[in-house]
Length: 321
Ligand code: COA
Image (cartoon, rainbow, N blue to C red; front, side, top):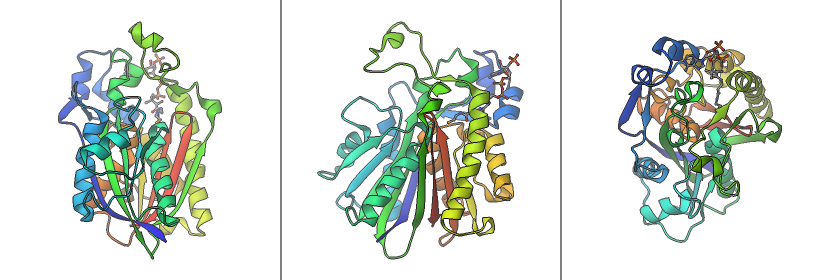
């Protein structure tokens, strides 16, 4: 059995924050943000809007697109680093909202690579016959974790959700997935507080995402460059076979470097960073859905998905859409 993408959906919060808006409260400029990152604006969740709220909207669209109902879904896997609650997990909260009952529902925590991790796990359930119709989500509200006074991070991160419905088929859809992690890099990109740390920094009002941006940048380019080549090699295919690169949207310069590694012109790369910013685990499924809905990605085409995040964690998928 193979897992094929039967439908996609995505959702972005209504509130848009432009670079000009940011200029009003942090020491930055539109020019700096655009030239260093490619970002022009991003969507920010409302104060009471949670990761599950965004995920639910994306999930409902994906279900409609795939023509499936609550009774069809037999697995829910959510990649997120920003759960509404510690437990129940976002998968379970989403399950209740969608009136789905009894199937396994859980979240995986792999920062910006969360969707690729979730997709890889769900694909294995489908391929082994443990699930026939899986919902895979990437959803995050990183805006709730950044320090809005820290210009080195607050201009980058944003909120959103993307969803994919996988169905069991005889023809390959998800051809292969490749996951990696290396915890030696834990200090380059992190949120330094949490449950068993006692939320001490949160209580002191002194916390935000910490990132050594230029060091992350170098590792991301090298690691993703190697990852895309590993993905092609594992499938014995040449670079020219890829129809679309659907990369994690962290920085336009990283995206361009990986496209170059694949000898792909930018016309064959789905780029959403200018209006999405870095939506963490949501970034790849948001870009995938954008490319499908505007008609660029067509059935039968070969897609290469990749993402890189804190940990570090990284992953790719070769997909026949
Ligand atoms: N506005 C204006 N200036 C800023 C700024 C901002 N928002 N943020 C940082 N700067 C300044 C720095 O203070 C520094 O000033 P200095 O030279 O006077 O010390 C200067 O800009 C250069 O900073 P640096 O961090 O070296 O810039 P950069 O070219 O590496 O770009 C990033 C910064 C974050 C855009 C880039 O490193 C990046 O994208 N890294 C990877 C991030 C990533 O992928 N993260 C997520 C993985 S999921």
